[in-house]
Length: 252
Image (tube, rainbow, N blue to C red; front, side, top):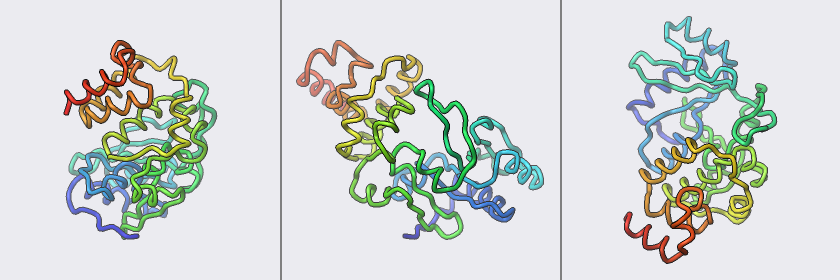
């Protein structure tokens, strides 16, 4: 499947950054939510790249090209490149994640291949790669079929994927609500079995705000169905499904 890339920002800047990496000999793709949303014909705010270049190599490529870089997450393989038009393009090196010891982030990363990189990601619809030169979709995890079926499915073993970063449970609810997806059985079971104790109030609040902005009624309704509304509003969760449904309808 090939897709025509839009000719406006942030795509123009992302293509410029990708072309520089490709010209330097580094395999590079568009990746993640930007690919998903382009395929769903949804607005795209940020465009991210994944590349075979290591962070130091990314910095070297753009130092030569006269473009500024910001080492926002260099320890995890992430460098932001600032395009000539001032657009920030996040460039992440292909990587494997080490053990997740805090239920949030890996203790260490090692650089790897494009396939291994997508196999560590959260959900299949977020793990699609796109060749910036011709719009060709590269799918190692069945994400394209899942997107066509409107299905949200964890990459690999759902229980393990959600335990790595427990916020993925709430992200799954938000993605499903916002994008109109249904959550497949194994992922749904893992969501209900994953203990969210210990998630910081800051991370919970950020997710709550995103859900209310993107699809408030569906977000509250699906949180109730997933038995996760108690993380945000214990009294409403305790009031039962009728109260949750009424609250969701008030947000429509």
